[in-house]
Length: 151
Image (cartoon, rainbow, N blue to C red; front, side):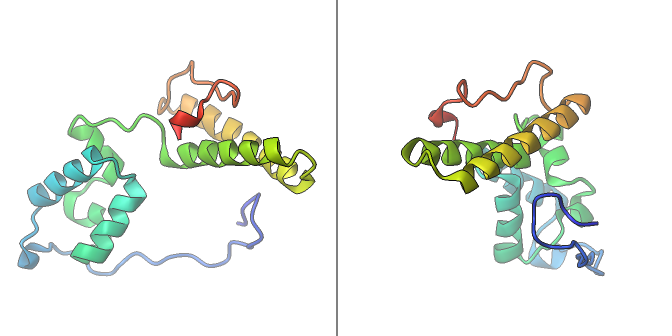
């Protein structure tokens, strides 16, 4: 199924890696991987950046195969809570950048339209995450309240 706000039709899909065994031959056990993940989360990396780091440096494609947890639930299990989901955070960041741009160029109609789309996407995602209790129920998206330091 295609996405609402992209040009693609959504036909292609990724394939789960066939290999489902441990990486102990590389000196990586479940405990070692969870320690590395905790260290990277504390250093301020997002879950997708941590996944890319594991893919590039350790040649581990899927953390879930080894730890039986995905990255966010592993962080929650260890007591590190990611306050706002990554996709919502980057949408808010993008909205702030576009709002700054529109202050300089108020007649840019294309970006006004895109800002409207992004804000509706943020509102739909926030209602979903409130329903799933991933963000607090009093969380509200107001671009005037969100400061540039949040980005």
